[in-house]
Length: 122
Image 1 (cartoon, one colour):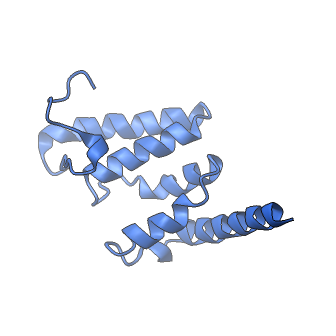
Image 2 (image 1 turned 135 degrees about the vertical axis):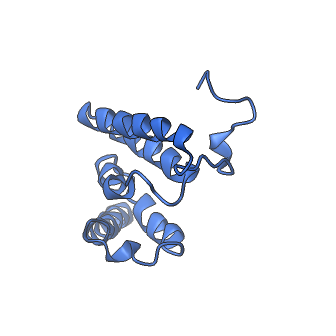
């Protein structure tokens, strides 16, 4: 973060760091390795947040964070995030809901949300 340009504000969602630029590739490699490291240490929520950052910087998903993002959301018990991801990102990538991992995670997240709503209603 210390090396970032002062005008680079990834938290706004408007910043783009294209993977097609040769100079940006080490950042994506390091970020994905950091996600994997966080996941191995059991920091699933942090891994999910880094995945969100990587996906917001290049929505084309050059390093494949969508393949593990649903797992980290389930492990972090962020069940409402998965339907929102499919709804918002699915408009760009129509085949997102057809991916087996996303389809299963979406069903499981909806089940967990229903479970929580049922438990809160009792």
